[in-house]
Length: 191
Image 1 (cartoon, one colour):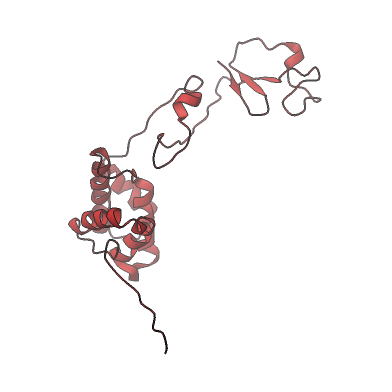
Image 2: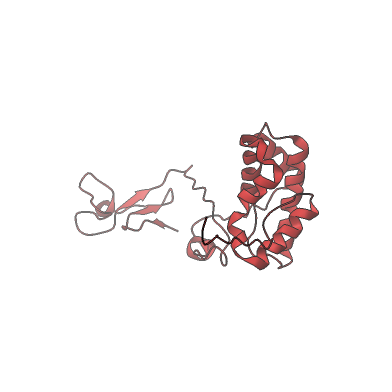
């Protein structure tokens, strides 16, 4: 098992012999030893890489992390936290946000994730968006929960079907919102 960078430098686990010609030295350049051989670096026994990667597929359209480098890393999937843990996390990120609202936010996001699990929504709303909503409430309390929700879900308002679905979930949690409505703006020809 080796870790190889794009330019060719290769990391090896402890105990794997490194050929002298490939050992990194002061003349190594662009991942190559003087003879053109890839530079090999022995890794420290406590070397760790912590990578946050989204799951593969829509809507992320990125690489399948496990397929690309799962044989090199010990991969651990971290699920979304339970509601009580998410409440504590969100409250710590936005300590000025009222506790009752933070509870409602966490329940809302648990419901949104349940919709994803049922295949009703595709975007896996995470604690990141819950924290963003609470931080918005803390920074702009005059916006209220509806204004904070509109800010967090603004991108989704461009898809009328998705916006209507999100608006229904938000309303079910007592959060009025402008997304999902049928608003039309017309400009006057003359003033």
